[in-house]
Length: 315
Ligand SMILES: NC(=O)c1ccc[n+]([C@@H]2O[C@H](COP(=O)([O-])OP(=O)(O)OC[C@H]3O[C@@H](n4cnc5c(N)ncnc54)[C@H](O)[C@@H]3O)[C@@H](O)[C@H]2O)c1
Image (cartoon, rainbow, N blue to C red):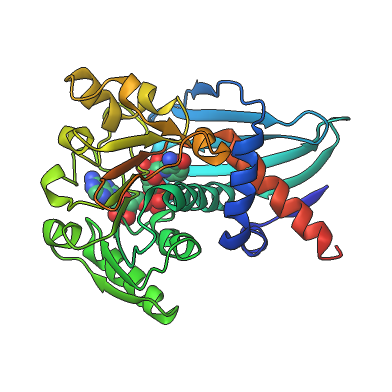
């Protein structure tokens, strides 16, 4: 069985190939059962959580991502989250590879957002505002660059030092990048606003968005997390990655609860976009919003790509 560590996995998942692989996977579909969510007691500190995310495609591959989240780890100076991906042959169950789960998650997430933006953002989107400067956010300019002619990137983070570090890295990689001191003024000039934070209060307000903007919301995956206010969903065209999004994302649950939108107002999901069932953006003035919560289909796609790419390189 192969073991693909983080640097190897990273090198096997370039965004210009991962995006088309995800498009193909969303078009074809695969089996994705509901994820398991188990609470694990830890003596003397907060309980941990274990998430199990399986997916398979009949006749080819099956895989399972395991994510452990142990909040008590911060006290003993260990990361709070670990993730691994186990890939198997779907005909025999034979284990094929154990792959770094963090790389799989962060790269497939950035690639999925860029894929959505290839349908939803204006083709002449040159400027990108990134909210957050963590694991996922730091990859977004690279993923977006494969689908849109991004020239300028501004980075806002609750921790300005982290935004400065990302800006430095982006400049070294050829982007014209700046730290966004003020969220409102930076939103007002961005063609695409993308957020991958841990925020529990709205960061982006509807009045910050000019006509033609694409808003991409990645961070909030629980009912208490928010990145955009209710009005961002009022009179805009709303898209989701899968139908799990309106069930668990605070960014959608709140405007649904307050009657700003109904689930039936959601224009399409990523499967419909990839299959050509919905054309995406209609005109250059429309404001589009994409809310993602992630799916095991994306993990399986990235894991298969890493495995096959490694084999293709003659290993
Ligand atoms: N939709 C998906 O498929 C998907 C996949 C992976 C991660 N995520 C989500 O994306 C978010 C970022 O994940 P990550 O792995 O990059 O995490 P990370 O910890 O590496 O980065 C989090 C970022 O959020 C910022 N932040 C922390 N608290 C904040 C607050 N209160 N307000 C604003 N910013 C704050 C941090 O400074 C940091 O830049 C998480 O919410 C995660 O669950 C979503």
